[in-house]
Amino acid sequence: MFRFRSLFGRLMGLYLVIVVGTFGAMGLLLSQLLRSYFFESKQEELISQGREVSELARPLFTGERPSASCFCLECDEQRHN
Picture 1 (cartoon, rainbow, N blue to C red):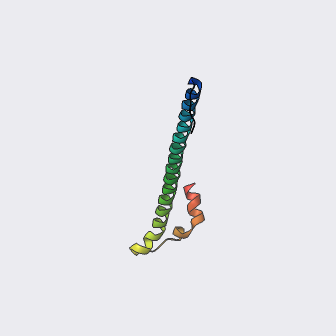
Picture 2: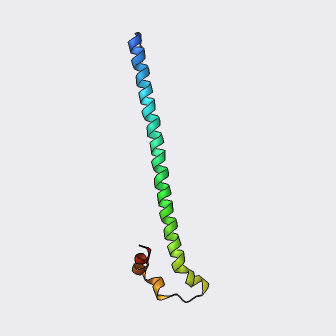
Picture 3: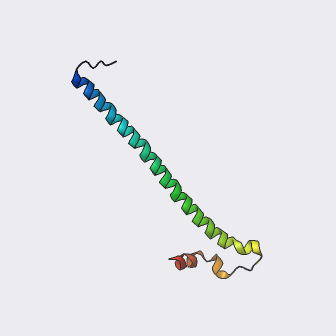
């Protein structure tokens, strides 16, 4: 393909290989970090929503009589804020 005969050509080729390799490695690392962050964020959100659903469904499975506040989602949101 290319033949680097001069010292300048060899140094330039090595420089380009290092730069391209570094950018490639950084790109892979960054994509893995972002993927991990978004998966963990979504996981925390789903766990939180699951806990809320379990609180609402608990009276149905335990045979307790659900309270009126159990089904008031707007009131529940105001209570958490």
